[in-house]
Image 1 (cartoon, helix red, strand yellow):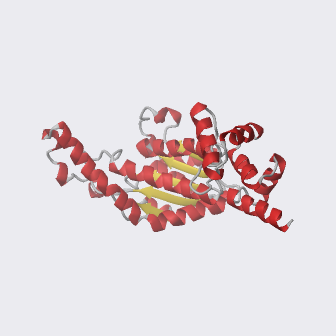
Image 2 (cartoon, rainbow, N blue to C red):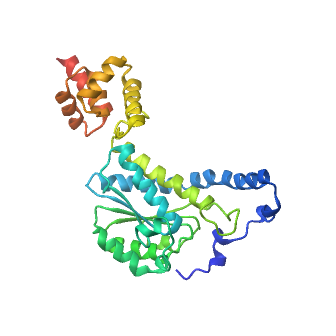
Image 3 (tube, one colour):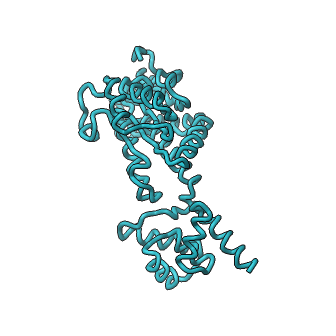
Amino acid sequence: MNVSLERLITERQNERTLHIDQASTTGMLELINNEDQLVAAAVRKAIPQIAQAVDTIVERFRKGGRLIYVGAGTSGRLGILDASECPPTFGTDPAMVQGIIAGGDTAIRKAVEGAEDNEALGAADMELCQIGERDTVVGIAASGRTPYVIGAMKRARTAGAAVICVCNNPNSAMGEHADIAIEAVVGPEAVLGSTRLKAGTAQKMILNMLTTASFIQMGKVYGNLMVDLQATNFKLVNRAKKIIQTATGAPEETIERVFRETGGDVKTATVMIATNTPYAKSKSLLEKADGFVRGAIEIGLSGKQSG
């Protein structure tokens, strides 16, 4: 935790952008974009650790556990963003994936002085969440040394939770307190220390991967279709119907009828059409298949063939 900032790769001066302030607008953007090209490659190198993290998250989800992101500043906001997008995308309970930021909700829009330097505050926030052994806690910080995050990770580990860190420096202090360390080293930023740039982009990509891959394994996706989509507005209603059409090839009038019958339940509607079974039977098929559309369809069709 006492790692000098000067030793962190994310805090070094970028030799490639020394004269970015003298560049034209296009030149500035090209320099920033050149640095952005490095992000995906850095994330790719971390895929073995990301895969381990996904398997850990899924194992605990299946036991009724939660995924809790913890961070400060940009990292905390990215955790909140990813968590908040899970319910509409995957139909999850908002409590299943949560984002916690140093300084509380105020810090989402405005920096809270000293919050990220308070290790005890991180531990206390884990206490408030009632972290337990079925949960997974993911600490996020570009530096890999943020006291608030380390405090949360320590407390989570004591409580028996799985602990993962996502950071952008190698051999991080956070990594010492994690079961799995995801360290995507993207190098110095285009503007010294502005880790909302490459580091933040890498974190966003990794968090996307953690939740997307985890929920695919939880049956929230059929093929590459979001079959647990929550149709909460006009755009999403149309998207839900398009998903059913893509999954089944059914005519529009059938989709409209089944969509009404299921109250907009994309999964059940898809199984109803694919297996030509009524609502209650389709719900039963999904239960037998642990919520996986593919499995439900296979069970339904095999039952018809055997019958």
